[in-house]
Length: 170
Image (tube, rainbow, N blue to C red; front, side):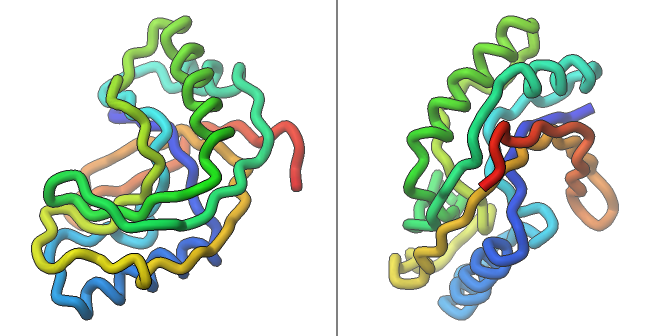
């Protein structure tokens, strides 16, 4: 099964992100837009791995406080458009610890540099997204999720199959 570890968003943050998607559609940016149900912030991409219980144990071995993140700026990786966050120092430290826990368990993961973002649209073409289109919304995220990715006739479907809550709730 195809797995990744992520932060999923609450309604307020999802509404803000889908609002940005609506704005960039108006700018004429075409491509494959991420469905609202699939919007997330990937912490570690594992890929094909058939022991989700082992991954969940690794996730639960790393304690964390709730993350306070603010939507901050548009960005791109080639033809992929995304929104970035500020206030990510604690999150970045957590990801280092999480990847050490995965390594200690012998769980493979994508070793790319961690850039906290949410993907808005893939294979995008059109003008750049102006920074003014990004609301500076702050959100507190307190649940790290193990997600399974399944390809369906309707597109990708992400399902939470494990999680870890923050050690202190705000």
